[in-house]
Length: 251
Image 1 (cartoon, rainbow, N blue to C red):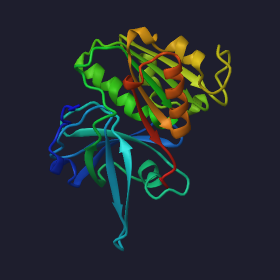
Image 2 (cartoon, rainbow, N blue to C red):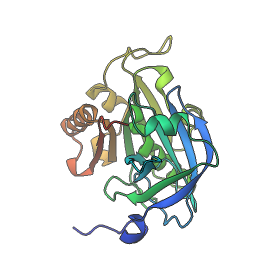
Image 3 (cartoon, one colour):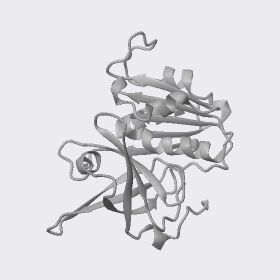
């Protein structure tokens, strides 16, 4: 089946560009959102990612992939980076990069795990930890486009201190419902005890299968596989479940 093209010709998206850091915003003790100006940026869809490359003075270089977290906005993009112990890229981006610094990146990359503003069906977003990053781009793209497609976000984290974008999610948007789940410790008085996400959570805070929602699941491999299997067991159409996994990469 043919798919619609993503923004930007292939050659343009695979070309390394020099971006300027415009802003840093701390999300948690370990995670920072970074706004960048990318001259000639070809545009992107919510759910895509970029490759970021760092090069040392001796010529050694390394790169990592990070989800775009912003809606399309001219040459401005945003990423959120969580520092990984012993990582090569994330500790620098999350802890050292400063406003005015230059970074090399290329993209956007990816065309399957994306949401387009013209979609009008209900959407279920299920995030595990930092897997909320591309899903936040979808929420922001919906807001920017004035979309009417109803969204539900189920966001599973270890502790309350691990939540990204908390202020923005608490403010909310019309047609967006957000539910936080906790696996290690929950806020005092929280109605659900800490524990892994289960079918009951997806049934209670997700969409019924007969609403035919588009489902986007992102997080660690085990989390994604478990949620996707549970959604199918609940009766959701497997063809409407899009997944993106991440695992240890060295940061």
